[in-house]
Image (cartoon, rainbow, N blue to C red; front, side, top):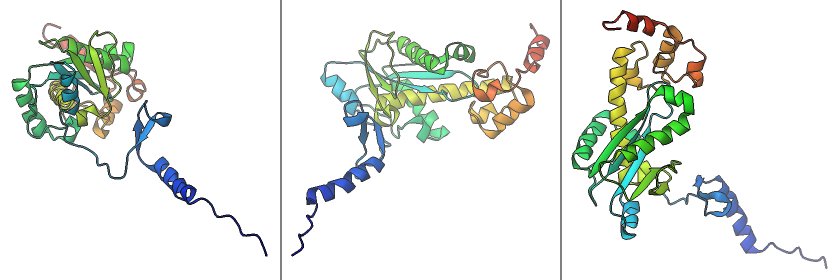
Length: 264
C-alpha cells in the first residue's frame, strides 16, 4: 500500500494567504509595529472629520493649552512656505472643520473667520523664498512652524504637530500625529488659517508679478504657472533651488519695473 501524503497543517494553509494579503494592504509608518509599519485593516475607513481624541488625551495628562500646528505651501514653486498655530477652546469645533485641502475656498474663508474669532490664540508665520533657497525647504518649513508657535499670545503646554514636523529648538512637549490635519481638530484649524492667509498673500503677489497666474494656482506647478516661467523667467518670489525654477533664467523684467517705479 502506497504511503499517504501528509496534508499541510490547516493553520498554515489559512495563515499563508492572510500574510500575503496583509502585505498588499495600505500601510503607514508606525515605529512600534513589527517592521516599522502598521497595516490598515479592511474594515477601517478614511476619516475626514477631525475630532478631539488627541487633545482630550493630553488634557487628561494635565495639559491645558494645546496648540495644533500645520504647514502650507511646502511644494510650491513660488511664494513663502507658511505655518499656522491654533489653540482651540476645549471641546469647541466649528461646523464643517476639515483639513484645508478637503475644503473649497468659501468653506475655508468661513472657517478661518470663525476660528480666529473664537480661538484662545492663533498665529501664522511665513518664511520667504530667499530663505528657503538658503536653508532648504525642510528647514524653512520647520522654521515657519517654530515661528508660528512662538508668536501665540498664550504659551502652549504642548504642541500637536502634523506629519513629520518636530521642533527641537522649542522646549515644549510635542506630539507628532501622522495625518494630523485630518484627525486632530486643532491641527485642522491650523491648516485652515495658514492656507487662507497664504492664499490671500498669493493673490496680492499676483498683482505685483503678473504672468504666472498666481492668484489661481497659489504658486503651485500648474500648467499656466510653468508657461509663465518659460515666457518670463523666474521672478523674485520664485524658489530658485526648485527644479522647475532653476532651469529658467531669472527675469530682469521685474528689476526694470522696480527701477522705473516711483521712489525706486
